[in-house]
Image 1 (tube, one colour):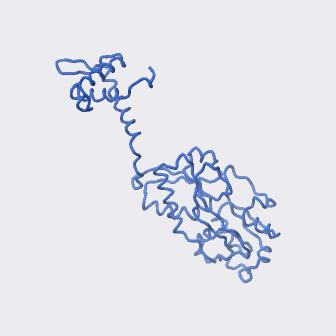
Image 2 (cartoon, rainbow, N blue to C red):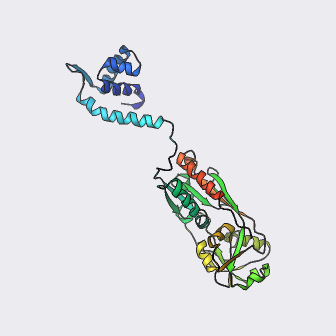
Image 3 (tube, rainbow, N blue to C red):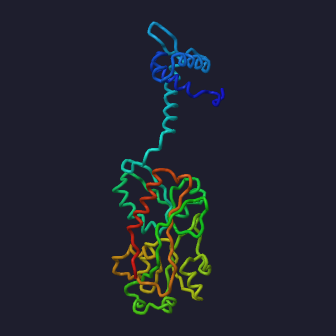
Length: 316
């Protein structure tokens, strides 16, 4: 039997007939004439090759075949009805949804703690599954296996949706005992030893080549344009670790300004403006077109942007 040859209205007729056990009442329930209902019953009998309902002293009685069909029929019609109903709004208070978010260490250190506090108030049962860039491919995002990506990008697939979370400038962090504090010039900056921290792309992580300036990022590209090069002695992918390393009195850390807020109350560290101009960066929120209209997804995107607006960059 081919499904496209079946009149789906007949399934509705059968459901009502099995509920009412009466052709006249079933017709009234559906708002059709009794002859139309009787004709529907004849077609149903032909379709299933079974009488389905037999007139007895107790009225219309379902056959064994009809009794077997009844729960399956109810389930099918319920699923169809649910599928065509307007999509309900996302109920954040009661939701237990897991949001899988690929997030750079920079965003995880700056944005996620504030986001989590907001979630505890607005959606206490929502779960975050935070993933690193090395865990995720563009294909994972495209297929909707990952809800959101929060990172900095030069290029992303054109089919993806994106919005800017914020723009951030750079600052330098040094130990409060570092003599550079008294004369933080470009010349002294270049004489110092540096901590490099970054993790921006997708896919399996690989080691850093200190000579490949193009892959070292914005700071080193700008220095290259000036014909300069800093001496990097530590490479890390973690902002928290980088700032702890900056407590050494012979190291300089250059990072986006909002990251410095993590150690704002640390007396061992001092944050200062860089001794040269570094273009600001953009932290972006990226997602698959497959998830664009999902109510829960829209709610989370809106919440992230609201939270981001509360985190102001410090000025040095």
